[in-house]
Length: 116
Image (cartoon, rainbow, N blue to C red):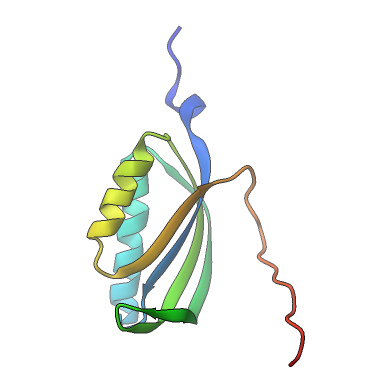
């Protein structure tokens, strides 16, 4: 009995921070490159949360701000290391993290910080 590709796919949550120095067109192309890497490896994009431009907690390679994207996608676990390799070659991607998850958050909610 042969296992289908869909049975082997896991759900992942990826956070991507793109350089704030990019034009809107260049930023869109850089993010499309990330999405294409996933779909080229047989993955499927489930949901994308565009978090917009935000200040970084600390400077990263002379960047103080970045554009944040949270994306849910399915892909074969074997493809994750190949994706990380592709991400490292993307000079406009200043940080990324990929975590396995069990659910897709339809809406992002954050707790209010206490006033100081």
